[in-house]
Image (cartoon, rainbow, N blue to C red; front, side, top):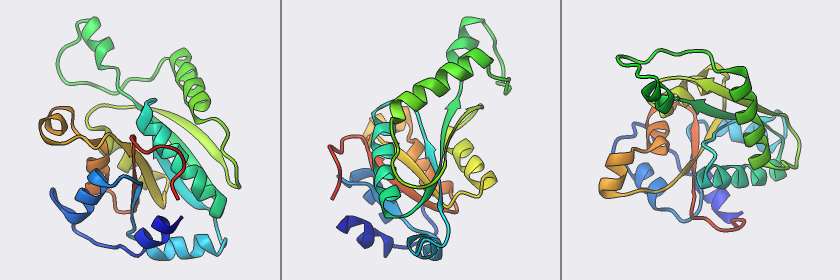
Length: 201
């Protein structure tokens, strides 16, 4: 994992659109790790405490890339992993003819259980030491903001998100959760490209 130690040495602050960190995350063929609190990783690699990792999951190839990278982390030292899916049922609101500002409503228990099962099945086995939990979170607005808020609430050391690495008009039209997390998070962020194949070395 040569790329891992190399990116651990990269640290910057004050991210802005078009920043070096953003360009790396959106163009790198391998996962990009942007470190903001290097001392956390030092204590983790010495196995003094588990690394608290929050993964943003969307049940697509981007999550597959993110969980694949976290598997490698757990081979190094223990990681407590929280897999989070932000559930935003805009289609359901449209179907029911609900207009106006969205309000956060409790998720139907059956739907929550079904989404949790889907996340667990897509995650598969996660070898190594540390806990693994799944959370379905109802919300409105930008998914990136909600992931960052949850990361702060749970005192996560690292947020891991997959990225489609969209560019140009595609990026403007669909938005970028990874870019939003990268800009807003105060903790370290890892962006795993969905196009990565197999295990990185």
